[in-house]
Amino acid sequence: MPSEIARATDHTARVQAVLDIPLHRFLGVELLDRADPTAGLWFPVGVPAQNQVRLLHGGVVTALLDVAAYLALLPHLAADEHAVTHDQTVSLLRPVSADRRVEVVGTVLRRGRSVAFLRAEATVDGTLVAAGHVTKTVVPAG
Image 1 (cartoon, rainbow, N blue to C red):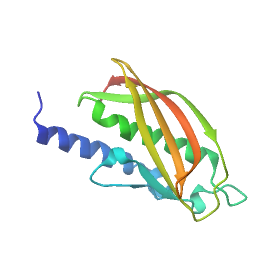
Image 2 (image 1 turned 180 degrees about the vertical axis):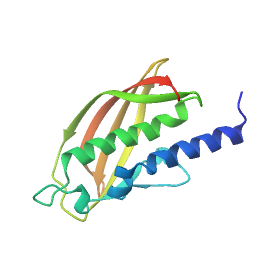
Image 3 (image 1 turned 30 degrees about the vertical axis):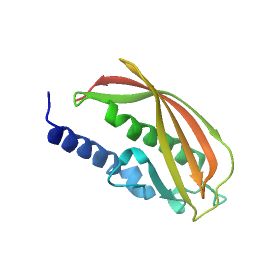
Image 4 (image 1 turned 60 degrees about the vertical axis):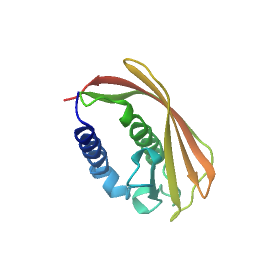
């Protein structure tokens, strides 16, 4: 069984790998709490996250709902496990204007042996703007 220090180091590296994805860097994704990645993430509705009418692009928030769900699931994964999305449904509830801050939080609803069910919500100033359900398959890491 891995030590707590090794597990924490692995977890930190996995979180950093998520943050280092070029799309996430391009969008300006940041953790809400660096000490607790499961708390979620935030991003600005800057130019890279906008559609042609300067509103939050639905594809961007959909992708980041999935990322927040993954961050919530990470503590439930062993070092030799990874999770990939095999289903996602999203409801875009209201438009978000340029230059707003969007916060996205994931929740683990249930982790089974090979499937995890998650929920993620995006808010602006405490108002729900998008929500989604994500189903991930747990697979061997590597």
